[in-house]
Length: 258
Image 1 (cartoon, rainbow, N blue to C red):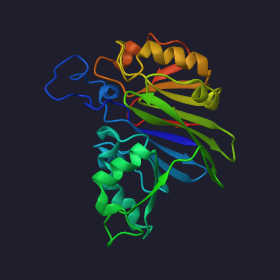
Image 2: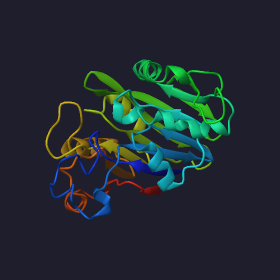
Image 3: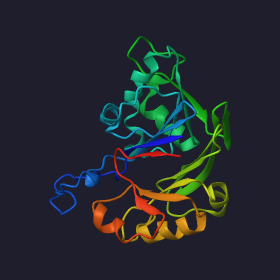
Image 4: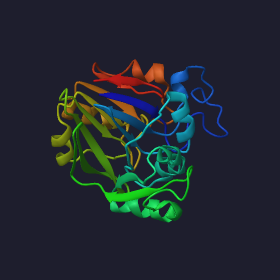
């Protein structure tokens, strides 16, 4: 299994508009953060999770050439507004791209992209989405994708756990959440790689702070934990140096092989 971090930033993106703080003006490329999403390759099955405003640029940068299915964790703008660029991945299929989400996520896709809810593209170069409610477990020859709900203010985010058939490796992706409920802990416990929302050192009403993420990581007991969805108060080198063993900060373009 391979996980490609297309973006690791907040809804503001880093550098942020009209900000000249130390992180936004940093020359460290790990501090250049587009909005958060990941691409997971599981025994050849290509799964895209979320589509940030920079999705096209992320795909070009990381040479993402194929997507088999798309999962939207929730309907907030920084995760959904890049979906129109999925049209490129519909070209080779000549049929709708399977899109999985919660009821809230599907409603947001329908509201923004009514022209794309089709069985197949109108013509080459157009998007077509087949909306599906994300079940507790999706099963493919290449492995499984399990889901759980994570609290994120007024909505729930889909937490995802991937298990690859050939290797048995497990990857948990828990972005955009204020806490990790007991059911989500049990689902992801001892995963080989865990990704957690770790917005900033300061507390936030709908996201986990770095300390809250570290507490969640200790409970999950993953083989390696990465924090994502980071704000401009997080300088990569400075903050990562303070993290305990087994926890690192993700960055745009990071590739992890399980």
